[in-house]
Image 1 (tube, chains in turn cyan, red):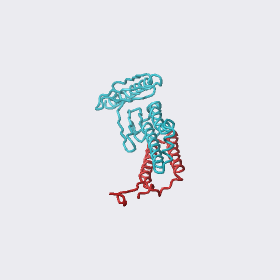
Image 2 (tube, one colour):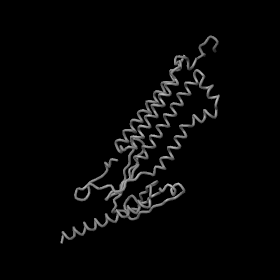
Image 3 (cartoon, chains in turn purple, orange):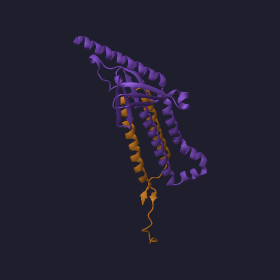
Image 4 (spheres, one colour):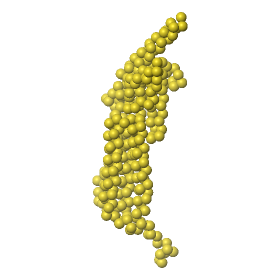
Length: 190
Length: 80
């Protein structure tokens, strides 16, 4: 994965990605199952309707028209599947030693990147609700900040409790770093 | 008389749109990602699309595309 959004921080050093997250694969597999079912619908209809479909397909005009429509439908479902994968794959959350970055992909051309400085984080909460979330171990993380973005929400994150704890540890490490840097500056002034 | 081949025009336009969308999605995936799973999904998409087009081509090969899709009868001697 490329991280084109990383910036230079203290002393010109690049910030380092510490956590890299995508939604749990179960969320993608739910969509994939739905689209695969859609792709199978014409074949299910063929089994259910039986001879009627055979008669339609044997007709001079209706037969080719139906086959073209079926082909279009299957291509459309394949496109939906590929787009769903792209949205899942490119929706990422990266926690570096300086910031939390939320990258949201909207279609092919829409890309939104929001960020939150670790120094502005006030509270991190994790939540696992529902049978699926508990069985597969995914949930929501809420990051409360003091800035303009009052809350950052990451839904469908695998192991939310562990991730929340790691974010808190990074926040504390960042706080210690800034305190030490400030103390150094004050010492330098004296 | 409008031949059956006219049905292939909207079909061709839709197929072209799907292929363009596929290329754009592939471009976005490699621009911002580019790991094995992206390669695998891209391979599956193109394999499925080409498979669908191949089966369509095979099934529609015996069709006589010159036969009439619509036969206007308004100007026929027995018309209005």
